[in-house]
Amino acid sequence: MDDHVVITLLRHGLTLENERSAYIGWTDSSLSEQGRTILQKVKKQWESCHPLDGNTFTFLCKTLIQPEHVFSSDLQRCLETATILFPTYPIQTSAELREMNFGAWEGKTYSELKDIPTYREWLDHPLTKRPDRGESFQQFSERIESGFSKIKQQIIASASRSAVIVTHGGVIRYLLTTYTSSAKHFFDWDVPHGGGYQLIWSMESLRRGETCMSLQEVPSMAKRNG
Image (cartoon, helix red, strand yellow):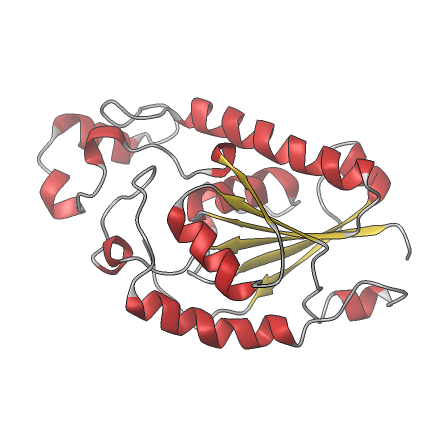
C-alpha cells in the first residue's frame, strides 16, 4: 500500500455571484459571508483527517487524507478557501487551474442572457460553442491538462503521496470525467461548494496518466449549484 497517491479535488466556497447563480469564471470574486461560515464548518472535517501511512485500502476509502501539498487556482475565492481550510500550509497557485473564462457573460445570470442567440447556441452545444469573447471548451481542457500535469510531475518528483487541489466546479468536473472510470458525463457530476472528491492512484498509474483506481466524495455543508 506504500505506493498509493491521494489527490483531493475541492471546490471553493460560495461567493455572492454563486448565491445569485451568476456566471463567474475569471472574475476575481471573494467569498461571501455565507461562504466563509460554511467553510468554517467544513474545516472541522480536515482538522481530524489522517496522514497517509500504512493504512489499508479499505481505510483509504473511508477517511479524508491529510495533504502533503496544497495547490490552488490563483483566483481569490480559491485562495481564501485554501487558507481557511489549510491555514498552516504554503499554498502553491496556478492560473491554469482557473474556471472557464465566460468572457462577455461574466457576472450575468441566465435571465440576463437568455435572449442572446450566441448564449442559446452555447447552452445547446457547450462543448463546441464558446462564450462571447470567452474560452472554448477545448482551450479550457488543454489548460487544465497542462496545470494538472505539472502538479502530477511535482508529486512524482518529490515522491509525495497526498495533495489537495482547491479549484472550481468546471475544473473538477473535467478532471473527474477524464481521470475516473465513471460513465458520467461532464455535466452529470455534482460538485458542491466546499466539497469535492478524493481520488486514489498507484504511483505508477498516476505516472502513466491512467484513471484513478478509486474515488470517494468529500462531504460538504453546502449543496448548491452554480
